[in-house]
Each structure stands twice: as C-alpha cells, then as structure tokens.
Length: 557
Image 1 (cartoon, one colour):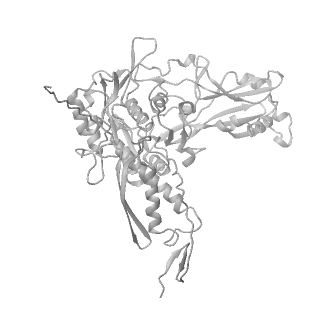
Image 2: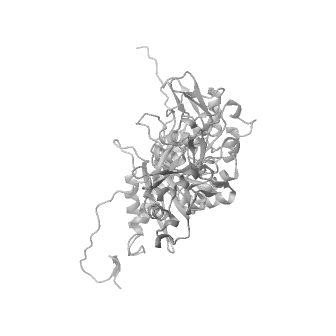
Image 3: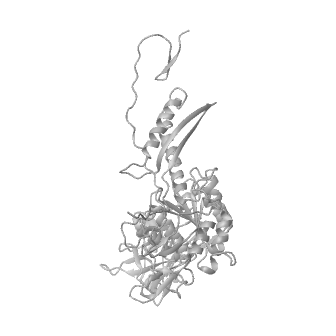
C-alpha cells in the first residue's frame, strides 16, 4: 500500500508531483495594551453623581461598567471626592512631565445598589418628572447661598425672545468636595459658593408640556443625562390635542423660583453587589485592579475575592494593588492595617502592597497637603502601567514633594520592606528625587528571582509572563479559530503550531534597536492527546537589572 501524505486537507497516495502554496509572510501579532486598570468601587466615590451601579435603577449590569482614556473625562464623570483627586496620579503620574505616561484606560464600576434622583414640576395644567441617569445620593441637588454646588437642578424661566413662552434649564453643580485629610479644604481650592454650576442643556422656548416632551426625545444632551419619567396632563389629551390644559402659565414661574432640585437618589453597598460586579469585570481587557479597600480595610472580604479573581478566575493573569500603612507607625506589625501584615497576609505574586503617605506642595504657599497610602498606590499604578512590562518601576521617580511626617524609611527599613514584599519609596540623593524602591510584590518566597513553581517577587517578571501568555491566547485563537475550516488535525498540524509559536515568540524578542518582552526562546515541543495539543516552550524574560557592582583594581604601574 502506498504511503499517504496530507496536502491541502486531502490524503494523497498516488505517485506523482504535487504543489502547494503557503504564506511566507508572518503577519504582525495583535498589539495588546498592558496599561489598562479597573476600579471596583466599594464606596470610595459615595456621595458623588458618578453614573449608575451594578444594581442600578435605570442602568445596571454590564451597562454600569464605564471606561475612560483621559483624566478630563474621568473627572467629569466622578464629579468630586477622593477619586477626583486620585485621577492625577493614575493618568498623569509625572504631573506636567509629558514623557511620563499613566494608565491607558481606566475601567470603573460601582459595586452597589443605586436609585436615580428625580426632578418634578407640578404645574398648573399638568406635571413633568425627570430622572437623572447619574444615580445615587450625589445626584441630589444641593444649594448654598443660591449656588447649585452639587447634584442636579432645573430652572423654569420666561422666554428670552418671546417672554410669553417658557424655558426649562438643566443644571449640574460643579463643586468637587472637601478634603478630610487636609482640614476640609476644597480639593481644587475653590469653595462651594465660588464654584460655577454647569448648564447641561435647555429647552427651546415652549408654550406647553407637549413641546417639552418632543424636545426630550431629540436633544442629545438631555438623553445622555436624563430620562423623561412621567408626564401628567390636565383635562386635555396631550399630543392629540394641544389645548390650554397643557399650557404653562405665569403662575408656574411664581411656583418655581430658583432651582427645582433633584431628590431621592440613594446608594448602598453589599457583598452581593460586589459579587455581581466581579462577574462583569472578570474578563475585561485590564491588566490590574486597584482596590478601594486599603489601610485598615486592606484585609477585607472584597480584597480576598479580588485576589481569587486575579489569580484563579480570570482568563489572563491580572494583579491587585492595595494601599498599606501611611507612616512609620503603620509600617511594621503592631498597629491595625500596617504594611507588613498586609503583605504577609496576601503572600502572592498577584498582589502589590504600597506603603506610605505623601506630601504635595500648595501652589503659592510655603505649606503642603498630605495624603495617605491610597495616593501613593495610585502613583504606583500609574507609573507601572504607563511603562511596558519589561520596564521595572525600580528607582522610577514620583511626582511628590515629600513623605508624610514620620514616614521616611532608613536603610534598615528598606531592607525590611524588601524582605516582606512591600513596595516603598525614598529620597535618592544621587538622583535628587523621590523614587520607588525595588519592583516587588507581596510574595514572601523571594530569595530567587524565579522560583521552581514559576512564581516571582518581581512585578515586571510577572507582567512579562502575563503579557506573553495573553498575546499567545488572543493571537492563536484569531489565527486558528477565526476561519470557516478547522482547526483539526488536517488543517492545523503539529508543525503548523510549532511554526506559528516560533514566529510569535520571535516577534517578542528584544533586539539592539527595540526593547521587548523576552531575550530568547526555544525548546518548543508539542504532544497530541485525544483532541488536544499540549505545547511547551522555554523563554528568558527581559527582567530588570536591579544592581550594578563596579569593582576597580588598584595597580602599581
């Protein structure tokens, strides 16, 4: 019997000459971002009008997952509070230095239950009720000294061109909150009564309720921010009969002088809400999660669930950043929430614990504002994810003006931090800047760069591995599973897999002109077991050089 061969999906036994054509072009792999980060908020932004929650009234589930690629959009969304301030170290960890990048995309989901706030006009000849698409207590309007400071409010005013008609204006307060860490001073230096509310949109000059209804259906700014929840007419039949029963009257202007405030927005947080949020964010395209439970809450149930998510449940390995203690008193064991206990508790190369509060100069004043470890954690997130995975955060500068009082770490303290896997900072006199110490996670087994079980204390090494694995998964799936044929043993042979993987790994090699994930690769092997291909390979990650030791020899001549 003639020996069979496989060619173009067919079995050929007859003697003769045959041809085949294969691609000699290695298409570039899909470019993957390593700079995306997700916040699952357990209440840090409570009290601010920031979208809806995972269990919202008007918006919920996946629709309550938001993403932002710049600081302006995120701050416009969050409105105020600590997260408003933390947007800077996340997106702009170098401050005004354009050469220092931050996170690429920030995902945000509120792990809570929210209701929308409502604005109701009870008019002479009917009623109108609007609901805010930004849900929660932060949507409720607050007025101080006649200024709408936070939340939403409407104004009913007489027409400008035709004073016999009416205009409904939709306003949003623009105060960003008081900073409890700095004597309740405004976050941006502007007090509530000096903040200028934002006019979101307004109706054209109208005479009756029906004209308002028609406008609500077409105005994009209204649609993005509100929904028309209820329309109550007088005796008339609404759109069918535009009669006097639906008309605005001068008495309505008397009834609604000033702001008609949004009310009734509520929010709450629970373990069930958090679990629902985790199901949504499990497989989103982010490299790490930033915890809003930190310091004394660092060992929360929510963080334990996040650890399980990033290390076990996600398709691609991800990482979790948790803020530790603020100063020397909360550095080592002894006080609740200290950095050492947090690092030892997690003991994982998927978790990074950041120690220390920071000081920032107040422009034009000889004084500082101080912030806890959450600020420095956001700086770490911004700096790490603004760098390629093969670039470690070791000795990378921080945009701060000092440590909080009683927090500077001695040489012995820094050795201690490295032993227990605590990411710290210090002032480097040679670089004349505050910098991060060595690029470490909380893995306690940290005598070797790479352990026998594949774990590593290095943030960068783990990021390289994650990025490499993610690239293989996505590019292999798109290459072998996106067509209408196969993959089967005929259309995708073992040699096809070996050739493809070799080409992909080659594209990830660092060269003399281009930095990259790995230094070398080899020993690609494949085994077929039933309907599975098991592929193994070896690679050398492009890990950091954390120390350079120069030794000089003194000669007599």
